[in-house]
Image (cartoon, rainbow, N blue to C red):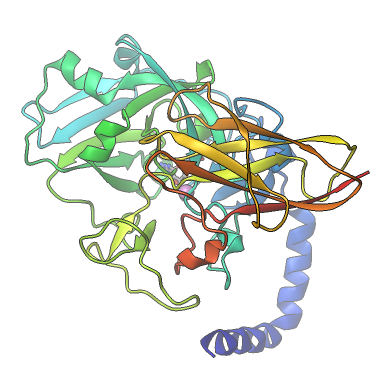
Length: 409
Ligand SMILES: Nc1nc2c(c(=O)[nH]1)N[C@H]1C(S)=C(S)[C@@H](COP(=O)(O)O)O[C@H]1N2
Ligand SMILES: [Mo]
């Protein structure tokens, strides 16, 4: 009923301004910039979801084309664009400072140059926007209409937060339960502030990343320095970080609440509290939680949707990942709508935060097929056949079983 009303109101409004809007849209869509026009060095095949702020997603084809997602093919999610940083080139600013403050015995500032002289660590992890898959929720929540491409698999290099504190001989007050991070507001950019529980940060080896895929961190991906929390969704991975504050409480800024949250029963972090699809939810710090650890999920990257492939032997391939806190133990493929499942062969060679690659060899007669895949980890976390059971107003953390139709000749 409510959805019906909204649609009607929308149609009425559209009709009222129809002529003017129609013309404007036509003009705009003809000039819609491509990914490479918006950000120097990006693959024009990336799909632009918004040009201000810049949001673009990768494609299944590009994700399947390389074991580590190159900077050209990596998605971008800006809430706030920083002027002059729309490039995959490095942001060379050795004097850039990061302030470590709050509940620590000796607050301090450190430059990027000094950071680069401390012991460096490398970690390969999945970077995924918690809105990835949003457009599969029904009804579709508002927000960027991500399909599958708000994800990448990259290698970070930088200084562990732990290493930095040790090197500086700085102790964290036991009352500190959260870490709040701030991004630069240079060029008049709006603030971007996110908090994460220290427990999550410890598990996940939070790092001040200076490099990506063996190169200096691209400017558009947070260069010169970005906080990376392997195993978490994208939002806490604060680009252009200037301040890290140890705090007793979580930030109450808009990026913390109501944004980037899912409903919970107060006191219960998992699972998402089921809400009526299409309903409204009044997000508070108590009745919801941030998008923290990544939900277990898996994608089919070959065959691509709609592809025609040669039989008899067809290798169905893809990737799977979770928050890295428990290994993924099984990845299963079904070709009959979930009636039977066959275990895929799993290959894991990028550590616990990287994605697992899998292959399922199948002998297939000519015909039409629909492949489904689901992953399960060592603590039994898996994916729902119907991802809509976790429908939430803002459309986060989709992990419904993926289905891909293809033809065998
Ligand atoms: N400073 C800053 N950091 C940010 C954001 C932002 O808008 N500003 N977006 C966050 C979100 S929601 C995501 S999904 C990731 C996207 O990282 P990427 O643009 O490098 O792909 O960055 C996170 N860090
Ligand atoms: Mo995101």
